[in-house]
Image (tube, rainbow, N blue to C red; front, side, top):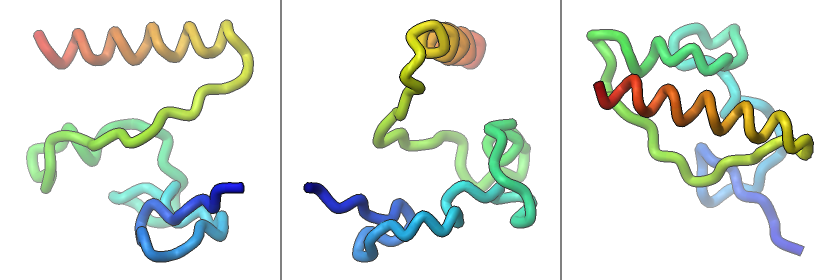
Length: 78
């Protein structure tokens, strides 16, 4: 069995504390992928490194998610 490591501290096991799911701009809010942290003019970075994508078990949801992701990438390239 593989131990899941914390995405914020690679030397620590994940404890499901939820800190990695919090908004960078509003620490009292869970991230809803609004992308304001990336798209703002004062952003410290302009991209996000994606290490893994966890998809829901429902195939229809997977297709909808991937279609939306593809649309966002195309919109950013224009």
